[in-house]
Amino acid sequence: MNLKALAYQLREDTINIIRAGKAGHIGGDMSVMEVLVELYFGQMNIRPENMDDPDRDLFVLSKGHSMEAYYAVLAEKGFLDKEDVLENFSKFGSKYIGHPNNKLPGIEMNSGSLGHGLPVCVGMAKASKMDHRNNRVYVVMGDGELAEGSVWEGAMAAHQYKLDNLCAVVDRNRLQISGNTEDVMGHDDLHQRFRSFGWHVIDVEDGNDIDQLHAAFEEAKTVKGQPTVLIANTVKGKGSSIMENKANWHHKVPTDEEYQTIMKDLETAKEALE
Image (cartoon, rainbow, N blue to C red; front, side):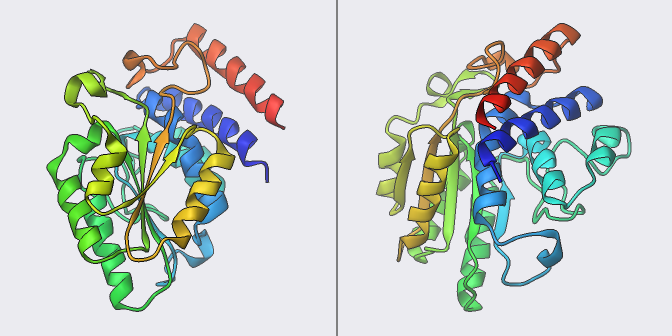
């Protein structure tokens, strides 16, 4: 499977979900797509047939507002029906809401209140260690989310318990709803921060590059005695010049004209990778 092209196909699906539901955190959906694609199609031991297997890998989308991208990935993986998602996303009374809902197959926990994903995954990873399981636990956080104190409490605990089965990813797109992360709540040297908390840190220079992500996740599997974090340097709104690196695309529904431009850009990028 060509995961690079798949990421752009799923961006198209994500745009259609947002248009159909008339809502969506489009910028972060686009930046996190390759991370989700590599995890679900290149890394994790999880599929619809084994979603109740106690030895399955576990995943939490802590930056739960990027749910539209997650819907696209889960549908492609076979957990959800794509047409059902398109028809019902963000409709009154729908189970397809704007953040992860663990009543849906394949979703381990409700998320969206930022800062909760990592602490919960620390508990999951600790439980797996106690049960002598060989699975891995993955969590994806936004860089704006790192202003939450519970993230760093979780980071301390992960080091304390030597959770080498835990791998976090920071979607480092440097933008959040109110602007640049460094203006809102600066991270300084984010790599050194995590190292000071006892984590193995992997810098992914281009977090929208499947090959770099694959190498980073493979390296994380070799780390013993400490948790690992990937700092994935991504582009918010990745895939179309009208969205890229623009904070006002944090939550936005494209107009008809914008939709046509975006879909043309995504299709061109996909064709170049096929």
